[in-house]
Image (cartoon, rainbow, N blue to C red; front, side):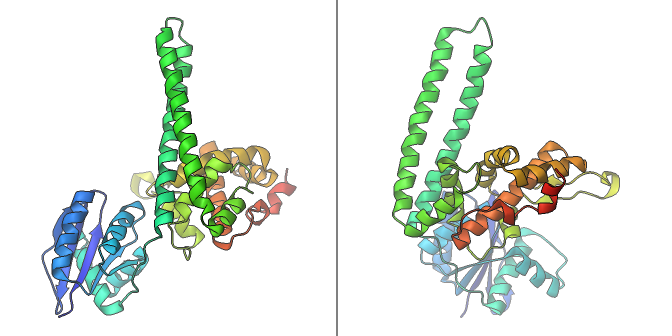
Length: 331
């Protein structure tokens, strides 16, 4: 008997529904934690499913999909649009986690999506290193801000100043050590070496930023379109233009990969100062009434598009392919 499993992935929990002979089981809930994943895997091994289907939901599905594949379970990861279109064809109007999981199980039975393949161990290790570097850089920035605030006070004890300086120096050493480890991993792959070289051709993308970008890019499916990568990074604009909110500007969704957003901020800042095309684009948006942060985020999206294409095609970054020459003519 074929067993089809649909898993609806959420931020705090996952819902599983089993489909046999055209009938759905009651949904079972598991915590979105390593312990919850282990419990789910034990249940799935007992079921011996023909296929497990889940949606690509940004940061939440990835670790679960890796855990399922490493456990030897057949897993397929589908685009959320495919699942939504399937629900529309079924005329399904009810939307709960359990209903969504049941639809995914039925999608697996009827559509037979291909099996998902996890990134290689080297790529996963690079992602983990890149994210730890990103976190430590954030901690170092916070420590430097604290030091600046303490230094501005006359009554601050020297002990506190020295303590902050020692903490910053320690973070510097940790970041340097992890960056060296990341570079060693990259050097094991000629393709990653070439891709990193292409990324560093962009204005404002130095070695540390290139490592962070490469660490996130290398675990993404290379068939993703630029718009999908923007959504993955949470740089897509979410409109809220109904009822009393008519006329309000759109805001970044920020539902996605915060590591990519963090890695793109400083390159975009550098670009609007030192890249003539990016600067002209930024100033054109300001002239149209956009706020500075809105214009900067637009530059970040442009940069992400260009950097993703550089990564996929292994070609050097060229801002001329991103920004309209008409903006330059107006400056």
